[in-house]
Length: 404
Image (cartoon, rainbow, N blue to C red; front, top):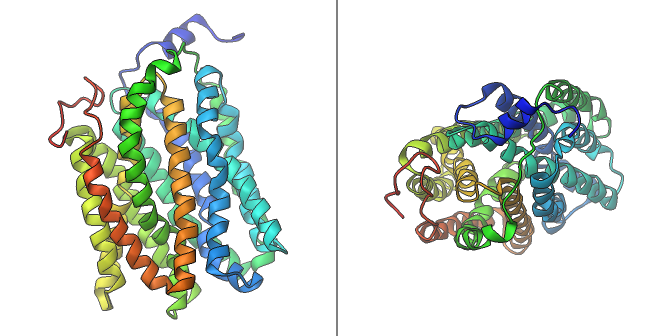
C-alpha cells in the first residue's frame, strides 16, 4: 500500500454518498472505446462468411469463442475485491482494438478463432472490474452510474459497425490494422488519468456470507438472462447478415445495426436512471414485455414503419442490462466485483449458447425464422421477474417495489 495516503484510504473505505462524475467519466469513456472495437464482428460477419466459406453454425461459434473467457469473470471479480486489477481496464482498449482490427487479415478459420479468443479475454477483464468501479463512485445513484456505463457501451456498438463498414470499403478486409491506433490512444489516456485516482483498498466481508443472497438473486436472474440472450444476440450479431441476405447493401445493413444500437444508448441510459425512481422490477418488466413484441413487428414490417420500429426495439431491448446490473450491485453491496463477475460470466455464456443455437437453427430452417423464435423466447422472461428478491433497505433509494 505504499504511496497511498491515509486520507485516500479513508476516502475509498468510507461510504460514498455523492456521484463522482469525473471518475465515472474515465471508466465510461474506456467502455465506449472498448465496445466500439468489440462491435466489429457483426458487420464483418457477412464478409468473413464469404471469404472463408463458413456455415451459420461456424459463424455463431465465432461469437461463442469471444464469450468463452467470460468463464473467468467471477475469478477476476474475486481478485479485484481482494487486490487491485485496474491495469486490466487500462490495457483492454489496446488489446481489443489490435485483435479486432486484424480480423479481416485472418487467413484461416482457426486464426480467426484465436484472435476472437484473445479479444474475449480482454472483454472479460474489462467488464468484470469496471461496473464495480462505477458502483463505488456512484454513491446513492447506482442506477444512474450503470446507465451511463451501459449507454457508453451501446454508443460504442453504434459507432463500431460504421467504423468497420468504412474500413471494409476503404481499407479493404486485409488492411484494417491502422484503425487500432485509437484503442492505443484510449489506453494511454486512461493510464494518465488513473494515476491521480486512489486505488480501491477495502476489507471485504467473507464471501460465504453472501452466498444465500446470491442464490436468491441468481436463480431467477439466470432464467431472465438465458431467454433474453436469444433476442439480444439475434439483433446484435445476425442483423446485418439477415438484411444482406434479403438484398440490402453493406452500408444499409450496417447502418440498420447502428440505428438499433444508437436507440439502445438512449434505452440503456434511461433504463437504470428511471429504475432509481420507480424501482428495478417494474421498469424491467415493462422493457421485457415490449422488446420482443417490437422485434416481431420489425421482422414483419415494410416501408417507412421499419425505422421507427427498429428504434423502439433498440430502446426497450437494450434498456434491461443496466437495470439487471444495478440489481446485482444492490443485492451484493459487500461483494460487487464478485457479483458483477458472476453476472457477466452467466450473461456471456448465455449469449454464446444463443449465438450457436441461432446459427444451427438458421442452417436448418432460415435466418428469418430463427429471428422469430428468438423474439418469442424473449417473452418467457416475464414471470421470472416476479421471483427476483425485493430490494434491500436503501439499496437504490426506493421503498419495496410494486412487483416484489
